[in-house]
Amino acid sequence: MPFSFTITKQDTESRARLGVLDLGFSPIETPVFMPVGTRGTVKAMTQAELEEIGYRLILGNTYHLAMRPGPDFIEKAGGLHNFIAWPHGILTDSGGYQVFSLPLLRKIRDEGVDFRSIVNGDRIHFDPETVMDIQRKIGADIIMALDECPPHPCSYEDTRTATERTHRWAERCVKHWREHGNPDRQALFVIVQGGAYEDLRRESAEFLGSLDTPGIAVGGVSVGEPVEEMLMAEERTVPYLPPHKPRYLMGLGQPEDILRAVERGFDMFDCVLPTRCGRTGTAYTTRGRRNLKAAPCAEDFGPIDPECACPVCSRYSTAYIRHLIKSEEILASRLLTYHNLWYYYHLMAGIRAAVAEDRFAEYSKSVLARLEVGSLT
Image 1 (cartoon, one colour):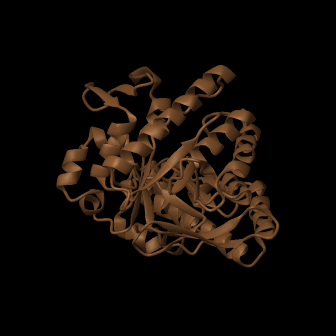
Image 2 (tube, one colour; image 1 turned 90 degrees about the vertical axis):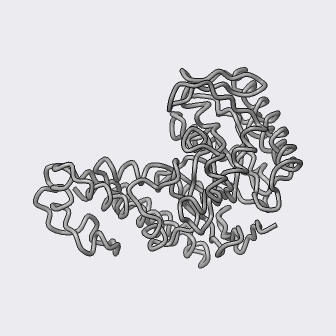
Image 3 (cartoon, one colour; image 1 turned 30 degrees about the vertical axis):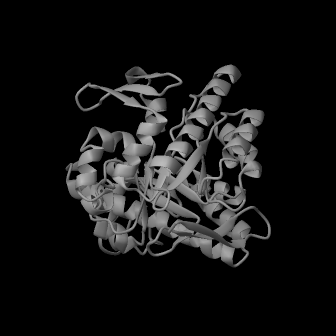
């Protein structure tokens, strides 16, 4: 099997660690941030630009790709790698987040989930077996088990029901993946749930760890809960995760949240924030988020971030990009998205270098202190 994960360094003062993911392409160093390419594209970016920055692992979404262009079409095209011209790693979500985010368009039963298609309104049925089949046809390198993410707030009993259903679905996913999937080519990750409840988090982590899949993810964080509750959910989960497997914290994307999660021992992250903010006029900088729609940016003829070496900051002024935003020019989204993804890539590179040199605590404290200073605007 081409998938492997090797831990290469453990921080001396925290659970932060370095690792290497091997998906059969060039090795991917962890901790790693993965840009979200929901429908087979990271919005506003070309694949060549992602490569230029340094990314080698992106996300696709099973639900949206199943709606359009469809798994059979993607399989006919030679798989998602070939269809989107991306010769590197791909991870596909299971559609479980849509179980959470589309409450008016779905009905959950133990058998699976019935959706209304966002494309034409047709009834669509997802269950653990069909989700495994869809991801097999899509051809992603890392595939996710179907899960149920309880909303926030959620009672203990409802959270337990969702968590236990997630466990049953995970068992079915693992069985189908092993018997009818492509385990020699696709690595299956199961997803821990449990809400904010310590006993459910522990139970979920221990049960799903026992299924012995190549990797394990933690879901149900950053779903509207207070930051303190999110951090507690992470802290209550990590000690019970298999130490030798990659740990993927799903959907977490603020730089400060990533730093704190790395400290707790997580290896993989994804979020739509750098691309979504890029399309809405917000830049990530070494001193926090910067709203380029703000009036002071109109006559700022310097770069978005004077400390950034990306091609956008090297060439274009803040005032020019603000002009593009106000003029509703597509180039504004492209430039800001490129800059934001550059920022995230180099944030992770800085994290890895700090762990390698046993100075992660110092690095994290420095980055957090600068982010707390506030915007450059």
